Image 1 (cartoon, rainbow, N blue to C red):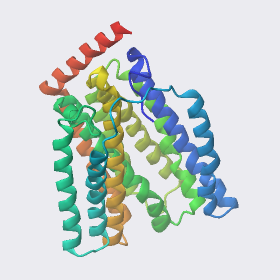
Image 2: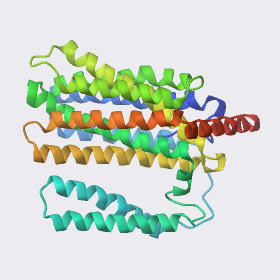
Image 3: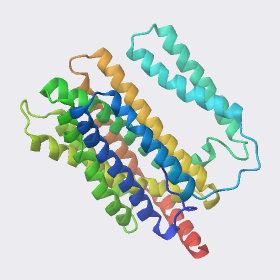
Image 4: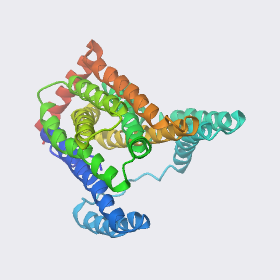
Length: 345
């Protein structure tokens, strides 16, 4: 679920994105708690079965509540869609193959085919009227920095999200129910901080807020990686909350900057790139956890958390680059564009 200027008043875009992050975070907070309750009374297949009524309810509500947009006049670009699937699919598969110890010729071939598909896709998208992957938006420096920051941060988030349950179980003996409850403070902290960050970005630069948030996020992952040998519940909870608060402080300002940096008529493409960056980072993060667990069975989860620290710090560095002269000019252009959009509403 993304927010764009076409579905939300542009003068309140930061708040809208913050509210969007709040809804996502509340859902994520309910998920582990609900899963813990299910596992306390039933078996794991019910974790999947419970999603069926929720999915049906979402379809019904979406049909009634979401705005209906007229279909585009152009035909769907199947060739670009196929190249897009090959590029991302085989690229991630190559990382997974390394983790599973496949022969080098196998994962190198996957990586090569993914690279060729990527080059062909970019060449095709540069001349497309309605590109599936709007790479031309990457010519906007502040947009590119925001995209790269998003990929790094979501990679760190997924490294932690996948590794933490194994880490808490293998190293400290927590049960599945306990782990579900202990992870809950993370999304709760996002739910509190993200709306505040959505308001703060209307006063302070997104590069500054994002950099501070990702540094806090990196700090939270670092202290989680070095939990004491016999942690109390409070030891785990405040570390989870710190990680979530840092990520919440980053997410809303960064998303707002990405959406606002694109021309209004390209807001749909910008929103799509936002989703692509998020899913690409999450997929790479999950694949890296699998690789680390396969190579380091004993300490792979702790290493994954530390790798997450590295990605979060890299994202913080990228975010602060938006405070440089180039980024500042881009931010000023965004403010001018926002003023024009607000005047037109």
